[in-house]
Image (cartoon, rainbow, N blue to C red; front, side, top):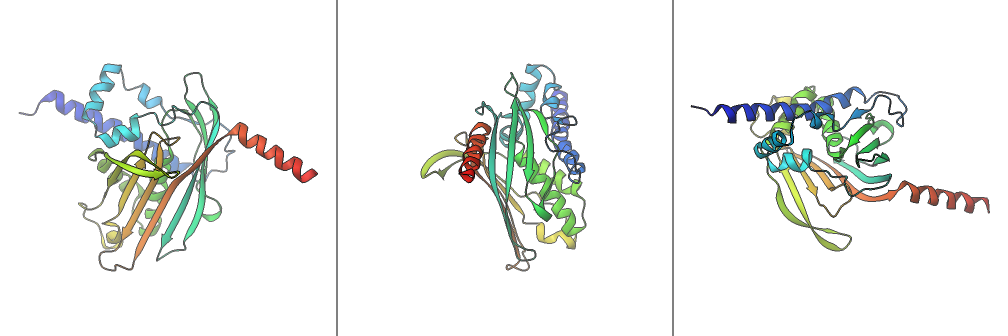
Amino acid sequence: MINNNKLNSSNNLSVILLVFFCLLSNLSFAADSDANPDDFSNAENAEEKRVKWGTEEFKLELIKEMSSANIALFIDEHLKTITEPSRIFYKFQKESTREDNFVGNVVLNIVKIDDDNTKHITFRYLKGRNKVRFPPQIGAKGNPVFMLFFERDSRDMQRLTGGNALFFRSRIRHTIAATDVKDIKINYNNQEISAKEIAFQPFTKTELKNRVSRYKTKKFIITMSEEIPGVIFKIEAFIKDLENPDDMVKEVLQFQGIRTNKELREEYKKRKDKNKS
């Protein structure tokens, strides 16, 4: 006989994970919005759902049932070491045999930090025809850049295949729930530092129609380190067609650095004064 408590805990866990990835769905509705990115009147509360989980004891019980990948992505507070308004910079690079290659920038702008150390964040995710608009967030403790990456990826796969972005998000969500973290070392600023790797393939065990069969081997790798501001160092997505080895797509988002808004204002002032002289 199945243990009822364990069954209920598993059901609760499924609900929680669904809540997190519902945020991804909400992000897609804002992608075509022309709203002012600095307007927080319709901002999403990044931690509201976590507050509603219940007592601390209940949260701890749920965490026991979660994979280490879920905890690393959805529970850990990636932004806790950032104590003043700052911008985190990432480079996004796409290489594809079917579409144009491009390189762009992604910026997380931590506009405000509340007394409880939660953040107000706006986003700049690429430019031009590749630009994706995401609504600002308030009350953030985790780094949402990985969710933005998955959201864009799911919607891009929908565009390319005619499939449903909800299906792609769902497969990503369920695969993360069954994935554990691997301890690794990475090189950063000419130093070897401790890091964690989350690697998963959402579609290997899924019956895919012909139009999306080239995505069956698609692999995601997330590299994280406490030594990196915002914790998330790199996110990679890689596709290689089993029937055509020359057909590939690789997308990489990688941490470039962090600057406080104060530093950026001072640099801007110096450049402005220099141009006047």
